[in-house]
Structures are given as C-alpha cells and as structure tokens.
Image (cartoon, rainbow, N blue to C red):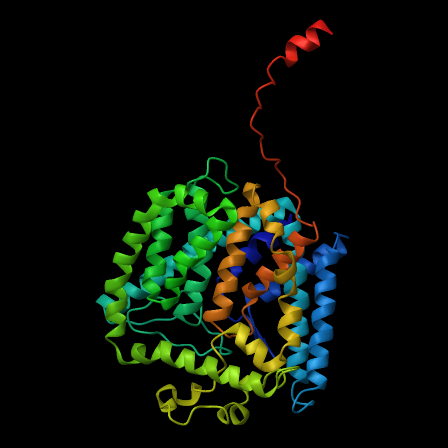
Length: 426
C-alpha cells in the first residue's frame, strides 16, 4: 500500500520544485527527490524488477560524466557536481523507470501528475489575481537553490519562476486536449472535461510565459506521430483549429501587458544571449566540455559574456546558468555528455509508433515531446527532475519494458466472400 501512495506522490511532487523540505550540504532537498528515493528503496527491498535498459543508460551516463570530469579545465572543481549528478540520475531514472513499467503505479503516477497541475494552476491564478487587482505579490516557495521572485501580474505556483510552471502545465494541458477527443482513454473521465481543460489553460495564461508559444508545436508533433500521416493529421485537426485561435486571442492581450513592463522587454533577449554564451563555451571545449558546474562559476562564466550587452539589468544573477538544459549540457560536458544523455531519444523514439495505439501510453508520448522542447528552449536548471522523464520513457519504450495493461480492440473484419460456403461443403 505504501509503495502505491509513493508512486502517486512522486507524480504530484513534480509540480513542487520550488519547495525545499531540508538542506544537505547546501543542496535543497525537494519533495520529489525524497519521495523518489523512498520509492526506490521500498521497491528494491520488495525485490521489484529493475529495468535493465535503465541500468544500461545509467552506466553509460556515469561513464561519460566521469570522463568529462577527468578532462575538465579544473579536474578537482567538478567532483562535487559529479556526485550530485550521479545521485540525481540514479534516484530519478530508477524511480521513473520502475513506476512506469508497473501498470498500476503508472496509472497512479499520471493521475497524480494531472492533479498536481490543477493545484499548481489554482495557485498561479490566485497569484495572478492578487498581484494584478490587489497589488499583493506572494510566493509559496522556499528553495534557495533557485532565484525566487514574485513577478507582478504573473503566476508561478509552487515553482521558482513562471517559465518552469508553464513547462509543467504544458504536458498536462496537451494530455487532456488529446484524451478528451478519444473514445477510449487511460485517464479518469473526471479529468477529461472541457472545464478542467479550460482551468489548466487559465493557469497557463496566468504565467504569461513565452513558453506557451510551444503549445501548438507540441500538439502538432504529437498529432503527426499519432497519425503517422500528414493527410490524416489535417483531417483530424481542421475542426480543432478554432481552439488554437481562441488560445491565441486570449494570450495576446495578457502577453502585451507583460511586454509593457521593463523587465519583460529584456527577458527573452537575455535568455538568448546566455544561450549564446553556452555555445561559445562549447566551441572552446567541444569534446568533453568545460566541466560540471562551470556554467555556475561566476569568474569562468563572465569571461564569455558579451561586453556590449547591459548585464547589469540582471544584477548578481547575470551569470546564473544558461537558459537551456541542452546547451548547458553541451557547455559543461561537450559532445560526449549530450550523446550519452540523449542516446535513448536518438535510438528508440520510433518505438513510440508501436506504443501509440495503446491509450495508456499516449500521455507518456506527450510528456516526452513537451519536456524535450522545453529542455532546449526554456530552462537550464540542473535540479529539475522532470527533465529526466523523456530519456527514461524512451529507454523503456525501446527496450520493450513498457507493457500495456489493456490490449487495444481490433475491428471485426468481414469474412472473405465464399469462405463460409467452402468450409460448409468441405
């Protein structure tokens, strides 16, 4: 019973990266980290099977990180980061892998994830309303590993910033959007309603995050993979074009109010500038990178800042990482690190075509597409555990570890003409 509760709790706690339950050696311990570690411990004690594909992927990444650490600019500097990365990789890859391979645990995890998205939306809407109409800004976060700020007129939920909340709400919104149209769905029918979808959409709009622009891209990618044909995709989605139009009309005025503020005029620009910094570091260290944690090293990072850019706008946080998990991985671990990290996506992604016919795996496909896009364009924080999900899902799909709990029904085929007569005479 306890392990079932933990499986659900892990899914819900993905929405709580801004919460720190404790601190260990200067590292804030998020609820999802503690809950995932508890799940893995109980599962191992209970002798539950560990997916071999996940073990192989972990070993490849540990080897790659070790090589990058040895070849780093300052080999002694990244050792702490190496230990942290390996610990995160072990806990989350094992937890996600074991949860998703068990049909019941997967069911609880996905439903709790949707429930967490609804709670996060409620908090975001409250923050948006109180800041916009009452002039009262408030946070419900305490994780000092992040740069915590209560932006005016924006909702952040239980996350450090609005873009991270949008990153977490995007998959939930697309999952509900896709499942509402399906006759057979893995999700509870209480979730698959237009009011629930609208509530999540309102939470997304309350973030006023530019990440919402990824929504049509994610839906497009999902529909193409599911449809396996552009023509089928067009036929299925002509009637849904109005949804995209309404979302755009609702988002434009809210986003315009955000652009009217001074900080927003620079937000996207500085994200792109820091991504360019990460690419310049990668150009100098293309094989094994500059070393884990180098992007967070003030002295090292400032050498690559463009002197023509007014970085004083960001104050002491100008050097706080690269706003892209992919580019940060390239800067710190060169080519070797990203190859090891994203190997499952490069090799096993076609396996989703085989699994997409099962209703219970459609949400996993959405989560993979959403988090991959957001890794590239949204956030460079290293301690966001949901970014391990796409590679874990791809590994499980490619190694055959994902087994459906329900076999899809086949349409009854009409008998071949004359077959029954021949069998009768025989």
